[in-house]
Image (cartoon, rainbow, N blue to C red; front, side):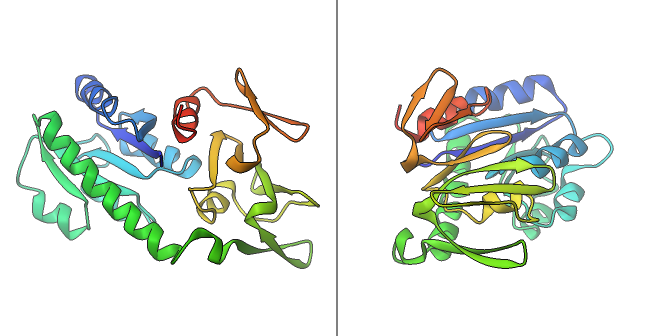
Amino acid sequence: MNVFNCLIVDDEPIARDIIVSYCSNIPSLHIVSTCENALEAKSILQDYQVHIMFLDIHLPVLDGINFLKVLKNPPQVIFMTAYKDYAVNAFDLDACDYLVKPFSLDRFIIAVDKAIDKLTALDKRALPKNTYDNNYLFIKADGRIYNINFDELLYAEAKGNYTRIVTTTYEITPNISFTNFEKMLPAILFIRIHRSFIINKSKIGHVEGNRVFINKTEIPIGSIYKDGFLKSLGL
């Protein structure tokens, strides 16, 4: 089962709690964070791969419409608002859906299904036929260009503005951000289990408590990632 990371952005605590409750009814959704304003949300988007963002329009400092305008690579956005007046603006920005508060669980599920359908279509375009037809990527590091086969990639670790990449035969630390590297990997094979670690699910030896063991390496599981990780394993 694919797991989709979600971000909730709303300045009203009750509204955030409702979305958290609704998300709990959809096993494929994993909430990475909830935010009160767009600036907090922007920081989260820089640190985490977010697939779906539930975004209120009336926010302090920077409203939802203008926030979406400044994002270079936004996730699928589902707007939430008490007003119908902004629907045209929202869909002009390619929003996935527009929910008028208060909305029911069934209407919420329809919006989420639209977002997942779009994400699935994007994945199919990125990986035609099957994942293993394009099972590699090229990375430049230390004056060389490395051909990294996904089946040989064990895990990656965030190292400031760099990413440490560990394979079965070597490790490199290219000048590429952890978030950007994560976007280069097929989600069906790789998953982030910690703020600083992405792993190849097929290379897991065993899981013990809050740790994953790959070969002899012990990798921590972050608390906000554990539910999503276990869901991706079908547990």
